[in-house]
Length: 423
Image 1 (cartoon, rainbow, N blue to C red):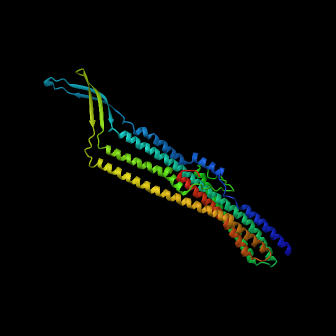
Image 2 (spheres, one colour):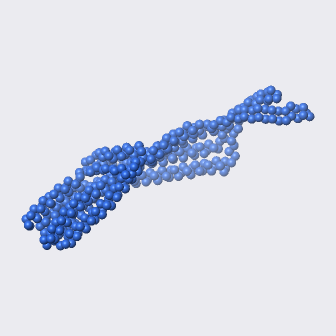
Image 3 (cartoon, one colour):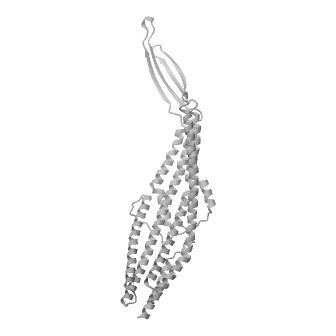
């Protein structure tokens, strides 16, 4: 009986070692995004409501440019004058018809400045559209990576559930022959119940993540989404200084705020032009129906900035204040983006180092510890608690490996969102 148990446990130990080493994925040399994620990103670009709305806002701003550069609509005028004659003085009554057209002409340069402001608004909306695309893609990637981690966690717990059930049966066998206390059986059953509890929580989290991804894709929430069994690690071949340069050169959020600053500068110029008058030109034809005479009239009127002390002066001050706000917002966004880039870069570096350490050192050591405890438990050299702790330690290390992989990819997604590049 003793010889049979020993062989059984050694065979079991070999099987467990093979299972655990086969579950350790090689993720360091991967360089390709999973095809399913690429398809989801493409679908989001086409169907996401936020992206569609941002695109339409950008297109709408394009149509503002010709409107802002156009003259005000001309006015068509028609009038009729009737005046009674002075009979004692034998003056004929007067009846006149008048019709003509008038056109308001803003001060030279105003229309051009308004056109520049509208063009800057269009560029800002384009930058905001790009930022919206990057934001949605980053959200989608984060949810996809979280879904991957949940699925990997479920797989790890299900595998350990099978091992714990085998361990529980062995503990029951040893207890029946008096080689182990009954509490070993209870501990094994408790851990199985805890795994079942965590599986329930993970399944709920998986369903929620799938629904959230479907929401971003603007499709029914109950569509199932699969994740790969192997998540590729994106290598960071760009140093931090280059990321800083990318922020300066092409970060959509910073670019959008820069257009706000340029628009504010044009608004100051426009407000100063209000000190000068706008003119209105009117031309018309007159016809006296009684005297059978006709003629023409031309009128020229101009606005007088009489109340410049309370109107134009304050308009200029308002434009200057808004410009200063835009400048400070620009510097604030710039510093914030630089911090986010550095923070994400450092997180990616840390996760990359931890992945190498956990994958190539800690998990192999924990696997050997568990297999040794398993073999020694079969011959009575190790108690059940030691065996259980070694299994839970290995489980925790496997979960930590997948968690660090997900953290690394989330940090990369954050870098892509800020800089607008695909890594």
